[in-house]
Length: 381
Image: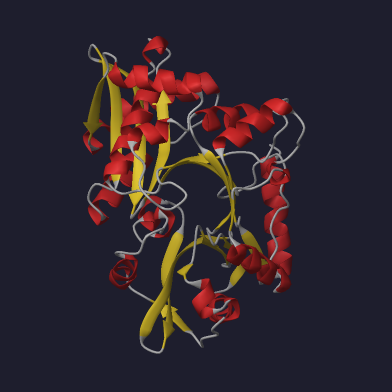
């Protein structure tokens, strides 16, 4: 592994975006415009340089602790850097020095690498079989040795992460559900090839929704109240508090201002009535089904599945390699309250991917201890 000597400095949003342009596999969470969506956080763009060449970049979100003026530095799905070409120490050392000067008490970093993948059918079978407790007990279909090596290097350098268990941790989930849009050789699938990964019932319902009487409409930021009406209905039905309409309007406006067409609002409409809605985000060759909501009416029209069908179609047309459907638990215990989510997403053709997860490095141990204590108490309610 080449160990370059890298320097680090803050960069402008223009420099940051120029570096990201044309690079595949960059999460939208690492784009500078995402900072403008996240109210309550400060931000900075950092660049790693090998001489005069910009070889890495990161969006860093800063959350200030009350009174004391120190911050939590958070790098979701970042930094964007080739760890193999540049070396772990060469990337981390100047970043940590920078954060010490900025009075950061805790660094939280999620490098975003894919560690292990399990096919949808294998995960569904394991959930039904009841012979395994956690996803890592299953044989993987693909494994990234560099991600494993990086995990060992982070642990050796004093970084820590939560052990794999059945529940969700704070931040971005370690286990995510993704509909693959390419085959094992990296070739784009046809729509029928994507749907072939679905469970039989889900595939039938998705096709029925797509060819039924529903009209799929593409909305604009002016339609966000329509989205939010269904979102509030879904939140009340499923007993979660949800976000205000302004959050979604800001997200759509900021993402599309930076990269036109990167945030799409969908509606499934029947006889003038909105039955389902969804927001899809795209960054380069990656796509995410980020938010969805639906009415309790006309369930047999399968409106939410019709939207998934359309999102897959659009993502294929844009050359995306997967459609991410969000986090899942690592549990394979069908009695666990989160197993139903995994079963549903794998029935919709989602492979289960274990990312590298999020890692913490305390730079001020007393403050970091107090912060983690507070977060644990808050999560317990």
